[in-house]
Image (cartoon, rainbow, N blue to C red; front, side, top):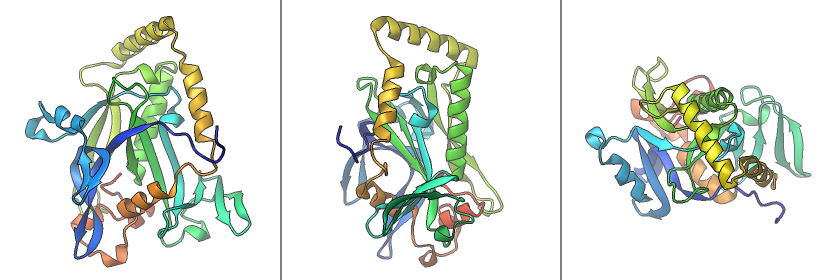
Length: 294
């Protein structure tokens, strides 16, 4: 395996609850109240929708896609959801510092150093909104490709906190059979004083509609037993994935970083203080507010 290259799950497309639009010559994030599933190809209007997007909307009221059936590829919650405090170079998109609240890896003149990570609230380097939470949830939507994933990326505490809790709870409740559970992504809305009582949206992970937890666990045990009889080795898959993520000091590359900078790290000083932009005010979210891209 080539060292220094993070081996991440093969990506087939993206899941988003917003998009980047051009306004007055600037590219700014715009909130949405539904999911959109896109391919990895862009045109001048933005990311081209994946065929699954239309398929999932067929029987949806008003064609508002607010639930997506998903399957986790790994049993380990931390392999499905990758989340850290991250600071990007806004010109190159390269990660400069990545930490977990205890330790971080930071590019310095001496190379990449391991340093304490006090969290963005009190880290001197993070002041001014330079460091954000950054999460990536890998899910499988297409059963014809068992290891292909669609990625949901977020810089919002609400989604990261909720997804992390759900994954760990379902993992514990099913005795580690997370990859066998029938799950769905669910879009939820809430309003707060920080959002001026306007609804903002975050992503939750729930059991598929109409299935109780006990029923889901029974189904998971059956799927796990059938897989083992077929010779499938989930523990080895998780082990190899863990090695792949750790094969590089920084999991993200500059190309992904540039997309993140554009999508989540807009220049707030150039944005008017309106309800529309409040949903994407990542700076305020780090101070305790809520954004729509979480």
